[in-house]
Length: 193
Image (tube, rainbow, N blue to C red):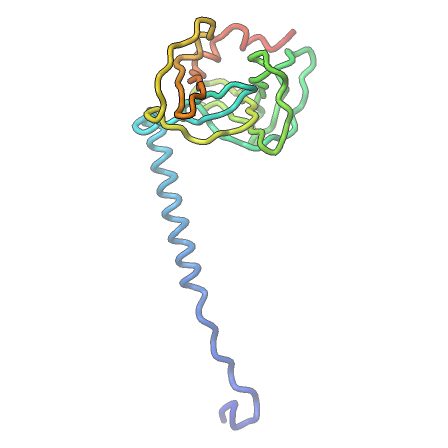
């Protein structure tokens, strides 16, 4: 006896399967993962990373960081203060289970301290540098292509870790930093008072 003959309601028409949406979602995820792996491979090999840098703001300075020299970019989080440290050394943060020293790089550059805000980011150093450290940036300004900028002569008073300077199309000065040179600077290594 069918449902119609027994007076029971008819089986509802099955809803369209959610599999196409799920399959589409999985396909997009696979494409995204493939692109991410390609970017990571390019960053490690230096093939595309040579022309693209991460733009960040430290105080009033716009800086460029080599993608192969940075690890992660994480939102601001509270740090544990370390007593008797320089005013630019904010303390230690737990980033994915690793204790990391956080430097207010604007303060290190003798700008006013960077107030933690929604736009603030902590940029960790690449594990390849062998230095468990991170810089606090006021803002991350996105990827910048060096080909879109004009080389500018280095100012006389720039530190050794500022390896190049560029002018963008709006005439703003950008300083390209070499973190491998920064971690060798004696002042940077002396966080204690």
